[in-house]
Image (cartoon, rainbow over all chains, first blue to last red; front, side, top):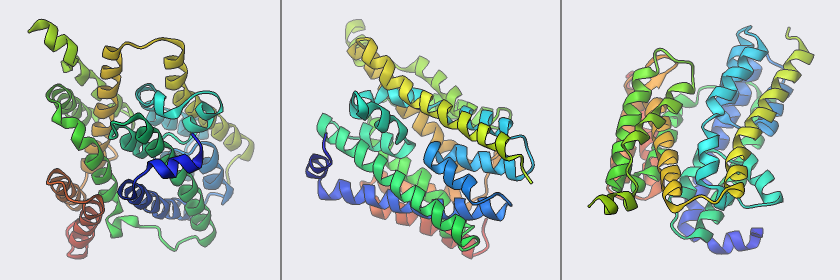
Length: 229
Length: 107
């Protein structure tokens, strides 16, 4: 899908919502760059991570471990654990990602946010448009933000003061809420969330979220429900 | 302070590994014809994972519970989203609630 047709497919409201999320991500990126440099890392470390890894949670974890004097390899393992959920995301939105070169580029810009935007769209074209616009938009804003943060140092280090730490879960919650109208999905989500929260004190970062998949044991596909009726 | 070659290797492994995790889904689903039922389960799996991200990001910090301000902000945003408020209202209200509570000294 060409860029022009992405813009034609997105309606104004969806485009505005996506732009808002990209902007908020950009602000978090500024703080990420500043925190990394403030923690004693060279400016190129957060910048390089943002371009080649491009996964916020794992990047924060990585610089946190390395800046605290931890082993870079341990930081890599921790980051990979957090990013494992992308396998399931990729299976769910493979149609929006596309094939050929699009698969390579589209996979790299896969994030929680654009996956959530994509699964909220019923129409396949809108799904693809939302996925790409949000993915590319976040990639640009995130990397620009990190550059600015790393260069400026301690301008914004505490985005919590602006409540951005509450805005991000709220964004994802608003995007997944429509999917929770399905009773079977809702049951799986509730069980999964309880498992994730209960295991958080004991398991390394990222693993509790993966454990939530156990909630799928309570998922019944619509067809199966019909057949047993 | 840090061993630069080791740092570069670590970043390289994280980058290649993350990309592999990301492309695995699209690569697998192009190789196998996935039934509608399987696709339904995969869609539910994505919703379960995103919900777990929401819950852990909203309620926990590291291995323990987070304070009051953040969960309160997410709750306000969630209720507004449920009442079908515009997206921008949800985002701004969630951030403003958490920021406001912190301004009042409530962490």
